[in-house]
Image (cartoon, rainbow, N blue to C red; front, side, top):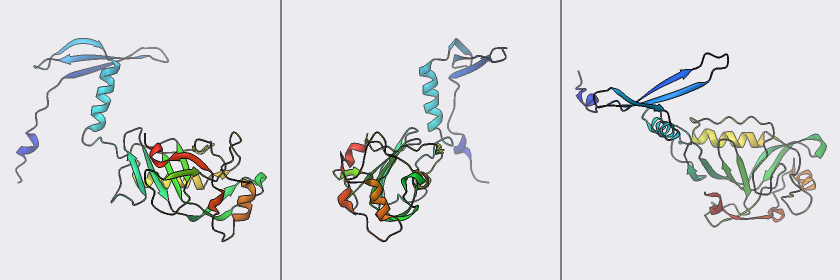
Length: 238
């Protein structure tokens, strides 16, 4: 048998006990009481569980071995298109995608056919619940000082964030980095473009005419129509 003495070398001592109370009402109220523990394991100093104690407990549980979040953790080597990761429970990732042909969907009233079209290089920033997208004029890996342009699509606010409408976004504390990126891009490209928000036209000229001319053709995206977002990549890192 292997020597397993080292598995028991760390000593754990009780330091806090919690008791949860529930009222007998049909819609019960709940109350949590905390006890400090003496060196001999005797509960002392009963008091209502404070916000500070609850927050500290949550932080410690979240960092405990076996309970650590897998949020934004890569399943292998870090993908080359990743620019920045903040893996906190309320964190975000920033990545870029090269110019490509993508399947685009438009509501019928726009009179733009659904289909494949070339799109520019894009910068993506996403949290569990929000998405912002910007365009690039050049197909090179961006730096902190790279200028950003408005993404040339419908359903965007001037600040760069996307209105996802009724799309049900599902990201959890266990969503890996690859799942996060692929999930957000699928949400975005599988949604229907419908309208301009707050009269924000992200391109020079008529955006409807732009996509009528681009969809289901082999025309490269005309980067000259992009308008400056008055931001650089570094501005997205908070």
